[in-house]
Image (tube, rainbow, N blue to C red; front, side, top):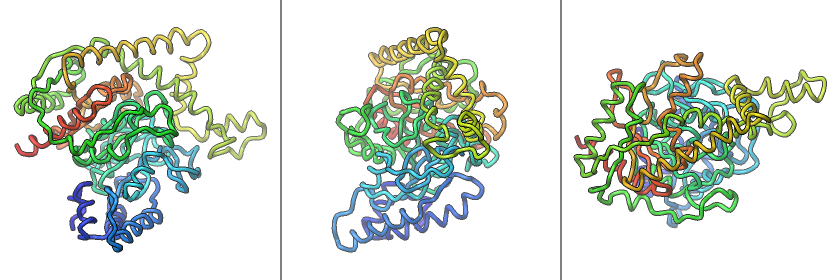
Length: 480
């Protein structure tokens, strides 16, 4: 069995039909990780003992002839911002270097209940703050397509693990594009659900009103399967929505003819790489050929999205990260002689440069005298951005854009220019601010054979339409 060709759907079939055992499948992926991850650096922690125990449990059910759970034996990876009981959970930060979680993240627990086998925790930008995965407190992740380039951030480890076939699928988190942008850079599918669709319980918070959990997979169908199992109301997270969860896999093949696609002019202006523009415009033309109606639209407040995002996200980050003070969690400096030094040195030595930069920005915009000028104004602009989407969705069923303005850039290329790095998320942050769902699906390659992603955005809680459109496009592209 060639594990590089396995998808979530085919892997579960292989286990259900006893073509392989869950333990043998997990061992095959650990061999792949041992041979490939030395160069890619996608994993921070492997959970071999727990994975083989879960796999053996699946095999025991099969041996008894009892019905198997729907994701029986499917090997997956988890971004290291999600808790796993008894497993080191670092969020990519040295300040949590030795922190072992006492409980499970709900999304992870739901996947394991469905039979999935978690291979390990993937590398990420520290506390999910970054667009390149170069801000990990441990080591950067390399793009499997070109090891000299970044995989995207902050779920770069999860995207790289899937793209290099070290896991069949992975979970990531998206605060400003951190599922969709690395999916675009690595040539895989990345789905960010509506805010509240998936519980955030057990997710180490970056910016609480923006954080989403979602799948990274090889195919749109796999994303649909995983979303069904992690979505739904969770009494442990008051922000999770009590909305019905459709069977996305069953909905995936329904016709898309007649659906109206909005193409916002603001996403095709200055700064868009010509090769990305050509690939995305070709993809839109392909969607028109398979029956969609393409409609030019405008999202007029888009130009305010990046500054709005960085005011709100840093403000929430400065508040969330106040708990990491050397007293209750993880790292504590051994050089401190006084209480004040203990707080100061623990945070100074435990946090990386990008985290410190965002804490300072967030503290500033929340400080007395500046709250109204920055934070309150940003929240008002956020409302305008949300209204842009609401008005657009009165005339279209979905919106299509590039996922990223460029293909994957080289490691270190933007490290000294934080503003250039922040602009890498320019096409993705609006969906996080508005809380609408989005998916990135591969739509072509540059002349350097670097993947390019097509982003599709939808109405609140209408992931079904996104998945139908993305699946139809994926099928049409592969048939061409």
